[in-house]
Image 1 (tube, one colour):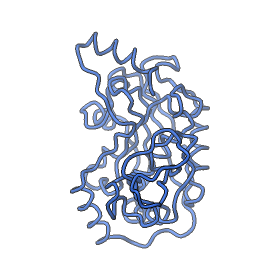
Image 2 (spheres, rainbow, N blue to C red; image 1 turned 90 degrees about the horizontal axis):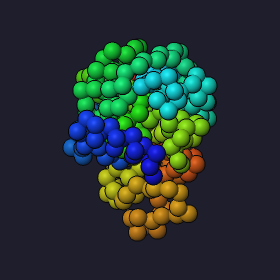
Image 3 (cartoon, one colour; image 1 turned 60 degrees about the vertical axis):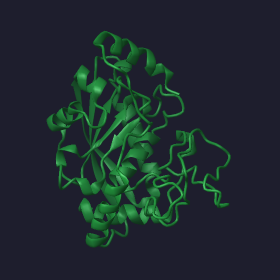
Image 4 (spheres, rainbow, N blue to C red; image 1 turned 30 degrees about the horizontal axis):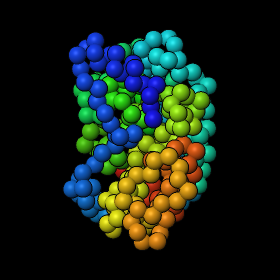
Amino acid sequence: MFNQLLPLALAASLVLGEPIKKFDICGTRISPEEKVAAEARFQASAVSSFTSEATIDIYWHVINAGDALEQGNISDSQIADQIAVLNHDYGPTGLSFNLVNISRTRNDWWYDDASPDTGTERDMKTALRVGGPSDINVYTVGFTYAYGLLGYSVFPDWYEGDPIEDGIVILYSSLPGGSTPDYNGGQTLTHELGHWLGLYHTFEGGCYPDGDYVDDTPPEDSPTYGCPDSRDTCGDSIPDPIHNYMDYGTDACMTEWTPGQIERIRTQIATYRGI
């Protein structure tokens, strides 16, 4: 799926004597136990959601390994196109997004190794993160040592305990017009932003109740890859949510939020992000 990354990752790993780390396409993780505890905290502290519209500021950090596009040095116009995609995809939620600033940093190690749970990504965020809980920090990197990874995020209730970690890290070539096949329409950031706003994967928890804590997303036993005509992985005669932004379908396949997801987003960010 991401063969264009393999030669670079393989060459770098051979030179450095390090293995290639393999990830699912989304690196956002939460254990079942952590999810249950987080939901209990949310239910105990949830406040009324906003009911109309809100605008969220974005601070964009371009991490590159050189001046070329192939080294992660994406253009301002690509970033503008990505913001337009967000505003389109999140239109039904009442949210819009305003690009405040673009920073550019040459750092080969951050570019290569800013995958989840590494000291590298924390060093990057410590140096660059700005704003408060209602501000989005987006970092574009190369994920050279994390073959197949498109991005990862935090959840909103994590902010109070570790504000430095707050933010979204994505593969630079997943932006509109990028070079990652099937995942270059900008929906990687739409998906990861869904986590930042409080949503889980549609397949979270498989076919069991309360998997993603949204009542109107059908249960799904496993992620959708590609864009099939239909799926019913739970055998309940209810089609899987293959077009949902919080599944794993290709960018062209992602087109939908459910009303329950929209309500959860609004309540989560009112509770944790002061929006």
